[in-house]
Image 1 (cartoon, protein in one colour):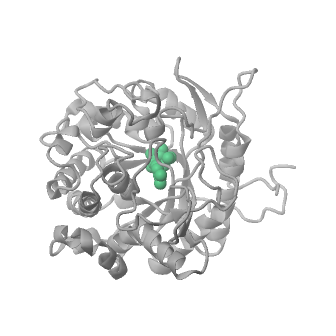
Image 2 (cartoon, helix red, strand yellow):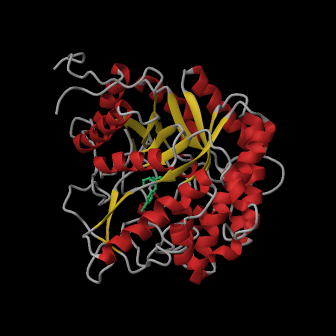
Length: 472
Ligand code: PNW
């Protein structure tokens, strides 16, 4: 089959953004360099039984020293955009006060390198590496953390807003709040359901305050959040299952979307969460701040949740090999059921139709905001073949199926403007340590050598053609 066979009428728009995403803690390493402070993830990795294999990201994939090589890789693959995050404790080692020049300089050099390679930088301000000093003062359950975050955002935006046009405030507030403070599967590893709800509100408030602070500095940047959305389906039509789906869609999707895009919390969730005193942390005016106008919405999509409210067996969505406590505050009874679809190496069911459902839900309930897939990808235990190449046909199939869904959605009028696969490089996969690999590019952790996988060549061809090959 030729690259240009006529049947594939559907092409992505000319100005579509193509790239990959990473985050600071997962790739940078250099944890003790240039004055970087400690983050909650440094502490969590030192906690026995928190991260598989006792892994940590003190070195990670050494992107801090190898960023030029990594930008060159992206240029080879034809990216026109790249999503990365800034390490808060590099900029403010204790989470407060003046910016450390050395930290800002690293991101400034990275941005210049990207721009010189024709790659648009897409900057995320918070991808989970809270300065430990702020956690010591209570962390996200404390309102003050939201105020501190807005100050941090202004420091970075003030320094890089002249060259970085696209900004994401918070990444996946669901994970940061509920995995961090309810199930304890992520840093800081607390198991306090009410505190997790407060954390969720303060992450959203931090987003809103940061957006206001950044808009006060300049008006020519585009700002929005990145949320992780899931398609949610009841296992059966039983009322208990329908209620379970309402609850999980509520906690995972609507809680964040309604607040961020409509400035309100869903009434049904407020009722569910009342026993935890959720609204005690919500002050007058907060929702106006949170629901300020966003220029874009980042959507991270991986899989679907099929749920039941009836008693029985079930598998919890896995965020950690050690998970035992439910992150679903107030809906701990809900069971997550496999539907027999093929799964990735994370055990997550592969369900591209779920991505379409998520996009349609967002378009229907929150029209008129430009959408970007800011993460989508598959983790496996890839390894090089005898000839040194890394063959990852499952990842190619996953990306192909999800990009096909994107292409169809665009053809049907969904305002989807870009796609960032997770991830550029194999990296530190949180509680899974280095055991799961999401990269287009394989990393030999012993030598830090980068080996583009077959999926990297496949993705480069998709970008070059502006669309998918014609198989199927
Ligand atoms: C996202 N869950 O994490 C993050 O944004 C990335 O940093 C991460 O590497 C990637 O997806 C792959 O895991 C998630 O259990 C972690 O629901 C856990 C969950 C969802 C997203």
